[in-house]
Image 1 (cartoon, rainbow, N blue to C red):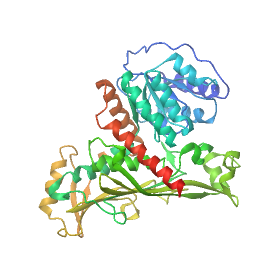
Image 2: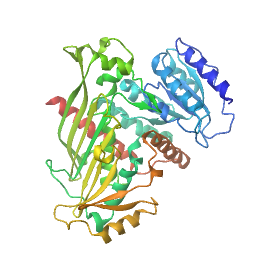
Image 3: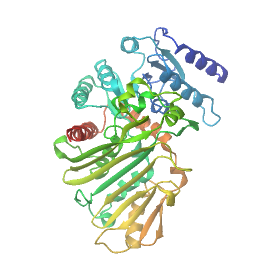
Image 4: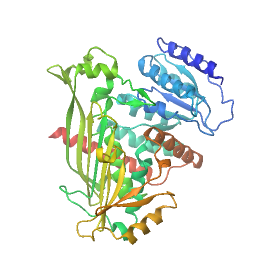
Amino acid sequence: MHRFASSLLSALLLAATLAPCAAAPASPPATGARFQLIVLDPGHFHASLVQKFMYADVDPLVHVYAPAGDDVAEHLKRVERFNVRADQPTHWREQVYTAPDYLEKMLAERAGNVVVISGNNTRKTDYIVRAIDAGLNVLGDKPMVLTPADLVRLQQAFKTAEAKHVLLYDIMTERNEVTTALQRALSQQPALFGTLIPGTPEVPAITKESVHHYAKLIAGVPLTRPQWFFDVRQEGDGLGDVMTHLVDLVQWEAFPEQPLNPAEVTVLSARRSPTAITREQFKTVTGADQFPAFLREDIKDGVLQTYANGEINYRLRGIHAKVSVKWNFAAPAGAGDTHYSVMRGTKANLVIRQGAPQNYKPVLYIEPGERAERPVPAAVAEAAIAAVQGSYPGVGLRREGDSWIVTVPAKYDVGHEAHFAQVMENFLRYLREGRLPAWEVPNMVTKYSTMMQAYTLARAR
């Protein structure tokens, strides 16, 4: 589409979200593309990041169904910024329906074959179930469930998806972070790593800590967050939102491509705690002058207490893991969201750090294990790196004290936003093949079961 026409169209669509509108009857893709996207109620910026780039066999016409309001308007603005940027501009065309019956309209029109769901999590499980029941493929953002009752419905949705020959998949971007992928790959090198130790609750075999921030830039623009994002009853708390990524990574790294079962998980402890948000901070990221009524019970002495922080200590197939999430309002200058991760082996530990000494960029270290030779012998470290260079050409080593730093070429530093396209490319590949890897569905069920165990335990205590 011509750049001016695309901008004009988006402007008209943005105006249309201010009041209910009717969409023209859906027509088959004119491009002959194999896949056509439906975006359902896009309240989270992750929905737009799926469209940050174009895909070879995905139609540029995207059907959006949502309630009228700021959420869908902000989504359309972000997609339009991708369309008009100077570097790698996209050419999406958004056809929008914003009447109150948006969900029923989507199910009736079936204007595409892949539904992207990323927004307010209150109805997410219901959206997933309804789309799967209608025979549509679903790419869902995390978390797919908020409560144990949601988990029961999600498990049934996976069974229905299998029966209807459609795919249900969640957006696990962190698997594509290169230091995490290398940590996993090097843990499969026995001469270097040995085997994963069982660990204890005090010294887990795997530790993962994630720090996130409410104020941030997305595609170079300050992010406007919806007010409901601060309500853990709608977004999910510290045990059920970002925690999804960490529990996923524990499974993905400790037991690669192995089907897991919820019966193999025992949650030992779980806790959650609040982040204090002032009214001024709230206004900075939402634009609202006052806290909304639905947050009233979370306000203490004029300050919002958002239970966004959480920690889970658990055992999976005899391996102890601890995962924790912390939310701050804003990052230090030059920093962003950070990730810390340790995998402890019998011969070496693989550690990702992302603090000030690393210039807030993730760096992977190979460190000697408790009873191992210090440092890891150069020949052993070099052989392990050589073994992964087929998948990651250009990675290398640099000595630092008793540790080795895994050096990573700049070409792999694509940034978090690009990981959404990588997830989408994987999902499209699975759609072409007609199936997910055999371990993905049982491991999604195990992941959300772990989180719901933590949900129940934290509230019981």
